[in-house]
Amino acid sequence: MLRSTVAAIQTAADELTEAEQRLRPLDPGAAAFGAGALGLLGDLGREAYRQWQAALDARVREAAEHARRLREFAGMVERAGDALGGAEARAAQTQRESGLS
Amino acid sequence: MSDALAKLAPVARPLLEQGDTLLATHGAPPGHEIWRLLGALGVTPAALVATVAELEPDRLRAAAARVREQERAYGRLGLPRPRAWEGAAARQYAAVAQSLTAHVSGDDGLANRLAATASYVDTWAEWQQRLRDELARALAGVMSSADAVAVLVAPAQADPAALTAAVAAAARIGAALLRVAHELAQECRDIVAAPSEMTQLTFRRVDADRVGDEDAIRLS
Image (cartoon, rainbow over all chains, first blue to last red; front, side, top):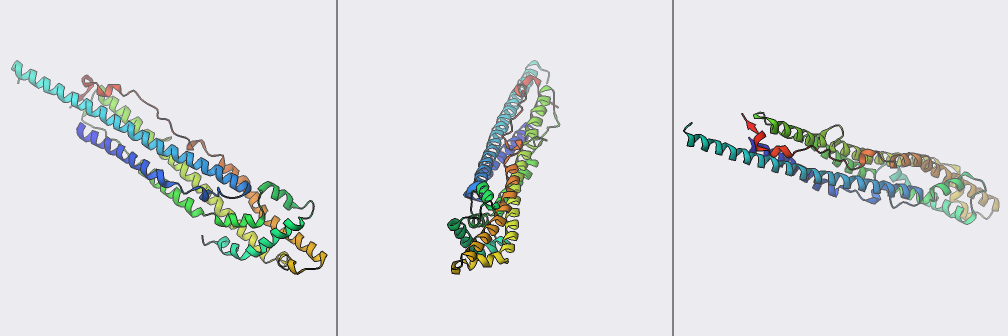
C-alpha cells in the first residue's frame, strides 16, 4: 500500500519537474511584446516583457520547488513505511518467540 | 501576420515617409494636435506604423496557449488517499497531501498563477491586435483622402501655398495615426499594472514531522 502511495507521489513530483522544463523555454522574446519599439510604446513593451519574464521565472520556480516538496514527502512516507514494516516484523518475531503464534 | 495592417503598411510607406519628411523639414503648423501627440508618443507617424506592423500577437497567443496547457495538467495532478491507512499518521498524511494538492489546484494555487500568467499574455495579444486593427482602419482612411494626394505631390510643388497645404495635410495624416496609438496607450498602461497573481506563490507549510512516526501508523 505504501509503496504504491510513494510511487504516486513521486509521479506527481516528476510531473512538476516536467512542467518546469516545459515552462522554461516558453519565452516568445522581447520583440513579441514590442520591446524594440521607439518611444512610449517601446517603454510599455519593455515593461510588459520584464513582467512576463518575472512571471515565467516565478512559474518555473514554483514548479521546481513543489517537485522538491513532493519528493521530500515521498521520502517521509517511504521511511514511515519502512519503520512500520520493521515494527510488524519485530511484533511477529515477538509472537513467535512467546509461542503466541 | 495577414491582417489588414500587414497589407496596408507596405503600400502606405511612401506616403508616410513623405509625410515625415515634410514635417521634419518644414515643421507642423503651430498649435497643431500632432505636436502634443509627437511629444507624448515619441515616435513619428511612419515609424509608428512600421513598429506596429512588426507586432505579432500570434506569438503571444501561442505562448499563452502553452501556459494554459500546463494549467490544465496541474488540474489533473492529485495525490492518493490510502483508504486502508488509519491512525494519527494517516491523518497527518492526509493533511500534508491535502496542502500539497491545494498548493497546485486550490483556489489560490499554482494552476491559478498559470491562468493569470496566460491571461496577462492573452490581454497583451488582444491589445496588440486591436492596435493593429484600429491603426489599419485609420490608415485606410488617410490613404484614400485628399490629404494623401497633397502629401504625395508635394515634392513637385513650386507653389509655397501648395507646399504649406501639403505640410498641413501631413500633420493631419500624422495626427490621425498617432491619435490611435495615444488613445490605446492608456489601456496598455493598465495592462502593465500586472495583477498580483503573477507573483510567486508561497507554500503554506503544514507540520509533516509525524508522518514518519511509526507508532502513529496503523494499517488495517
